[in-house]
Length: 248
Image 1 (cartoon, rainbow, N blue to C red):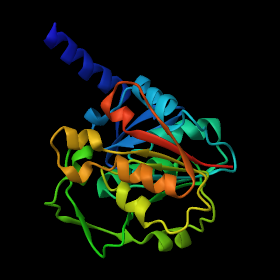
Image 2 (cartoon, rainbow, N blue to C red; image 1 turned 90 degrees about the horizontal axis):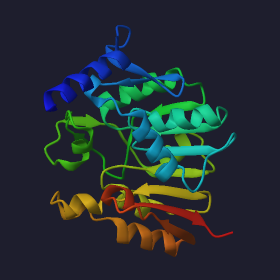
Image 3 (tube, rainbow, N blue to C red; image 1 turned 90 degrees about the vertical axis):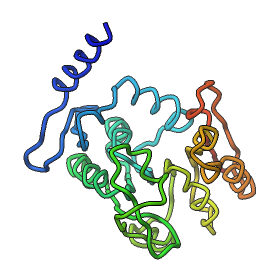
């Protein structure tokens, strides 16, 4: 039975995923558009994508047309296409610093529309950041042995480059770097809402105390006038997400 399930899983991937000669990546249909991925094993189940979109990312606030969404750690762009299907006229700036994943995201956004913008920068005050081109996307931000220099940009310069004067939803999933980003924002007045993945579950799993970010992130947002809404699904990674909205 175990062998049968393994073979069936591979066949399902082959049916859904096709090699794209134009880009050298693989692609599959998601919410009526193509998502480009590095390898067929990176194909996420649509049911899983729907769950995280509906239960986490956009559970408390669903972006609408004319909104501006900034997504740090946009990955392959599945959730952006989820929103594009519902609100095609919003502006969605997806930031993905891992070079290979960024290339895939740029191709996903290339066919999503001109208001879907892929950005390759690591948002940081550091002059240099090194990543490792790891087969596991989640491991990229968790190693100190990086060998790929990625372009960096300070927060203020990022806002200026993309002409951002308001953010209706600031989504963040950056493998522990969320504490640095939140603490580095000196003006929260133009950011209406956050949806942030903290990574205490990785610290609890032995990946290092650097990933323990939730208390600091929550405290910083509260100090700046946000009401925090936690998640309580009894699932470690899901319950480390927090939603924050400014008091009106």
